[in-house]
Length: 223
Image (cartoon, rainbow, N blue to C red; front, side, top):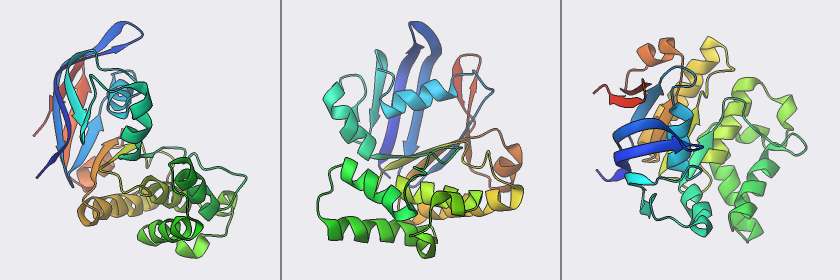
């Protein structure tokens, strides 16, 4: 299995303050990993480091073929094409239809041909089981459907990694379980690693997988 994320002896800083010390952490292709920890524990700082928003200045780290210590600003958009992000609050553009939300991301990430853009958008909507809603506006969809669109959007550029930040946080328990089944299936079928930050221990217990805990300035591998 190839490694998608590697952090070794990484020290993570936010605004000059050390948030996490001696981070040693790896995720492999297709692996599903939970990231748990209290609010303010440093989970977001870890995600931002992986995403290239926080520069890694001490230790070593890589995502796919990108070195997080030497990456230049102009390379960060290319790193982010390797990463899909799923937010708690969906972050869909409410002034355009579901499929236009996906077109927007594809155009912004360098896709040019209309036919290819349409085919890729529809393929990703099919992957998440929501192709029938392509022409609807986001406000016409339920929360679970909006999150499916968000996951479809995250898959557009065939990412090596999906960062899911509390993806079930705004959903009822039944819908949360549907979304979890979808994410787990995507990890397996698309060979996409998923790192999911969550507070929901019911979900963690119901869908067991590797757990990484952020606590007292440390990242603890519970495997």
